[in-house]
Length: 320
Image (tube, rainbow, N blue to C red; front, side, top):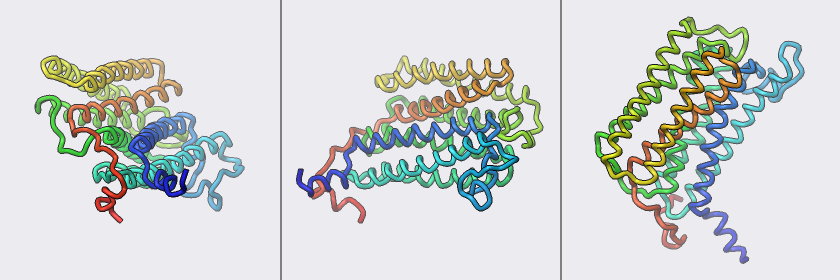
């Protein structure tokens, strides 16, 4: 293969490559939320007691009489994963920027990912420096939730066009989805408060939120019921609309996931919040965030994916 052709393939990635990297961003963003919970339920939140160093004078774990080796490995591994996510996010941004034709919206969404990783790392550092104060842990997770939501939108953007969005369903149904997104955010916030008052603080000495757990669980459960109700109303309206197959499939997936998530949450509570169930609950929560974002996307249509252009025809539209 001629060198010029090989260089062109490397410097101008295909839309398929951009999509693969976007999916990798989404998967890793979800993964670090799950590993973050593993850090918390194992009490490893201060396995590296400072930031950005792991220990004063060392970027990596060192033997310490007051910090278990396992806790150091778990917390440091989570920090390393942040670096992996940042690398993938930068690769996705570069691929989106270099892909032809140049797509401003796609590049904008891709740009959010590495910036979000940096912001998340800073929030994580603050969390460590305030000794895992419950409010900092809540903010840390909500930042991850936003990035997961936007990463799902980024994945969808790699398969659609750049036209102004046209509703696949009537406007009232799209407003209902907007309410669903708001309720999802509220469910997640209440979930972090339940965690803040619960037994898994990330470190045994971390003060907890002074609100009765049953009270928070009831409020959290009511919001989950509101999510289910909105989803059910949307489904009833969907029968009289003309949804795409993708929207129907996404809606069905959302129904299954929220029921599974509710079941896991109930079992988790009645079993006394065992560590494995907490991790499973978080995994299901990340999937609910993703499917809610996809519902939002599938209710709108932005036209077909732009066809790849040659470098000669598109170079004028690509920023220097």
